[in-house]
Amino acid sequence: MFYDAHDEDPNAFIFGIEFDGWLAGSIRVHVCSPEMPYAPGLEVFSDILEPLLEAGESFSDPTRFVMDPKIRAETPLMPHFGLRLGSMACDHFGLDQILATVRLEHAPFYKRLFGMTMLCGERDYPSLKKPICMMAGYMSDIREKSYRRVPIFPSTPAERAMLYGPSTDRSMRNRPVAAAGSPSGAHQDWQDSKSPRSA
Image (cartoon, rainbow, N blue to C red; front, side, top):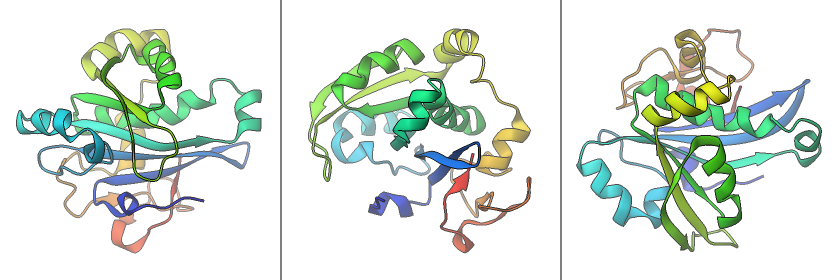
């Protein structure tokens, strides 16, 4: 188990990913915009990301992505379902880019999957043993190329609303989210539930 202060950010969404009734993985997605400028990536790559925010750009910052190694070995596409949540946030909130702040050895995967480009080489990140680099891709390019190549990535507005709330307001004012264990489509205020949501 892992916790840091970014779990409490008002623009953070924490998901549990289930497979055959088992908790297969988890991912945290920050919806970062000029209206809500909070994201883990800003701690280490502020010199790159802050000018983007000042120029009016927005991005999703998926972090703390973990998968059960046994399930991952048996289901090679499982990591795609986790990363799909980051691209769904971009589609739901109309964000410009998706980030990948990852270890350098994982960079080729993100380049293959999303066609991401390297924005910054390795830097140390608090609480991580290994340094991370930062990659990014514009959603317009990802939709054009990756969505066609990997058909699990497109999603419906109803599906996105069930995970991220019915509002597409990037300021996250009074954001409603799907509560863990609640019936499909049921929502409650974020302040009432700090538990991960199922995807």
